[in-house]
Image 1 (cartoon, rainbow, N blue to C red):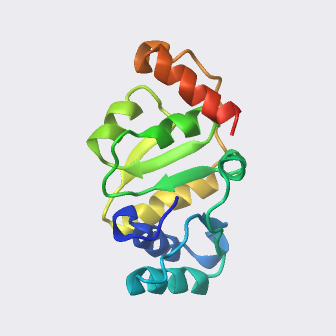
Image 2: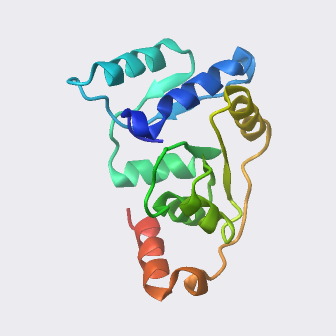
Length: 166
């Protein structure tokens, strides 16, 4: 996930991560940078740094970000507002599970892309269960299927190109 501003909802991920027993937490990588001019973002970064097994990765290049996504069991994206749902498409082509907030754009895409779950909520305990389930299961595998009929040929081609050519 990326970003420290309030709308990205990083605090919900950190809160859910802390619900898990320490020996079941795995590893949480946070991308993005807090803005020094925003005390709330700096405080959130300090909280993240204080939690064992949480690493702040800054703002990786697109290539590095795609490698991180490919190596992850899942991408957690609890944003409170998103316009296009591009992350669901990117994670599909990178063969990585995606857990997102229950927003209309995500629900629409999740109908066609079952690797995406609209299960992130405002419930800390429930989100802890979601994280626990992700960590307790092996990374899912799937074979890509044509998506032109879903996205339109242009969107499908561009998204696949981005995932293959970071």
